[in-house]
Length: 136
Image (cartoon, rainbow, N blue to C red):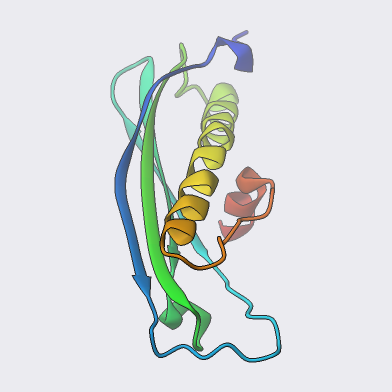
């Protein structure tokens, strides 16, 4: 049996960062609630390697109301794990890879908002794999 510890992160890269300040946004007294949209794609590279693409999008369309900014971040990680496509291993391989990438995504979102000279938007610590299970 292959253990989750047999998985390796080979490389990760930032595919896209986008930040746009909403200059017409007016801060009210109440707290602004921002609802991000997450997406995950899995691509087979070969029998032992796979790529996880993890993205977040924050926009007025998703939030259905005015927010101080729009942003999009897309990252991808290449992972290695023997027999990762086997039914009993696949979920572990994909979920663990997603959990490994999430802190990178979280940091990038905070950095691009902070560099936009607004209070940084910090994603809460969450069980990102559970989020994708609930989406499906």
